[in-house]
Image (tube, rainbow, N blue to C red; front, side, top):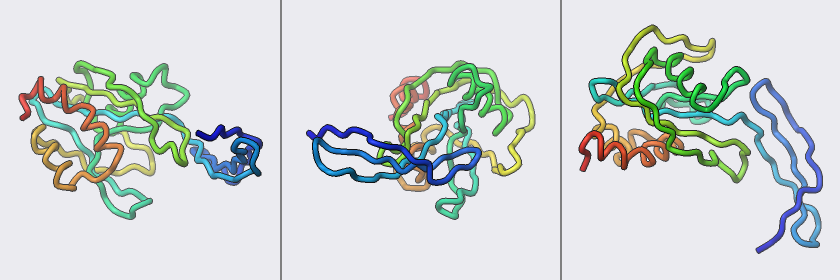
Length: 184
């Protein structure tokens, strides 16, 4: 397998959230090749289950697809977060108003390692209660909906939930959901 070595990194575009880099790599002793990488913060997503055993989903508009998607809550880890868990608790509270419960870290995965350098941490939170109104960022607006656990898994298989990282999180949570909620 080839041994890729970075030769240079040049910023192409920057915003307050993302930087696009042109990375120059050399494979073994061949000539340099340019690849573009999105530098993004790590983020979290939460498979959130209410005390009544319902999965909390948010429906929101996504600019890349220009469509509304059903998703689990989540967001970027920022400088004020002491850990991925603290970011997950904050994001769930801000997006849905749910708090409390029991939390399990299900692991982290590379979001899209072909073009991104960030990782996504997934948490399962159960026994949650609604304690406040959501506190969305100025560009956030979402509908909060809840469904039985089995319905959510059916929505994955039918394509109604169609965001790849959300599907990955739900699939990662599925063994625990089977045990706790007696899924087939």
